[in-house]
Image (tube, rainbow, N blue to C red):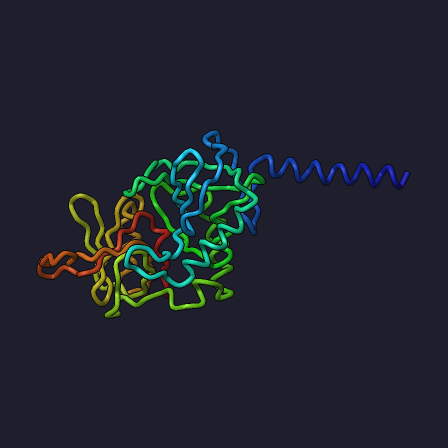
Length: 269
């Protein structure tokens, strides 16, 4: 009788967890594939860097929810942990070349790469693993992703443990004299907020940086105005408005960060 009850109990537990995962449940400590009719079964050909792979069908897939440090290319040296991110991804996918892919609603980036989320066959998120290891940063585009919350949890764990990219100076001040184009996390005090006729919101930080909020990020101007005189941390792609010798209009800041979602901004007291 005891053996029979044990077998029944075991079967119930197994069935319970199967039901949970098949329903698209997202675990608190990991990101798993939700039920999605867009999912594709794909095969890996090559890992290019920490956030880009090439598939057997020739497509290059750029992970849409993370940004890994750059590896060395052309005349640029590798960023801290850029090589480590690529090596981790290569090792992780060596025996997992059969993958699951969900394309982003924004199909391609400016380099012709397809955008989306990549998962192992067991449904676990590749982006999540890189964030948890401290080998990438979470990024936010329009529209928002179903996986943003669980991915944020993974990054938070790595950041609290000073893992990988969080063990070096990853956040730069808006008053720094050593700002560079490309992905950046910038901290600074908000000194001015204006709204254009087109609905774009411009947030000026102390120093030489301005934020250009559009799309979802500009949807609640009233909430954004509360940032005035507050310290914030923002992440996104830094644009040098003086690139190519262009002369800046009087009063314009040299550095601009494009912000598509308010999730890109952390507000401090």
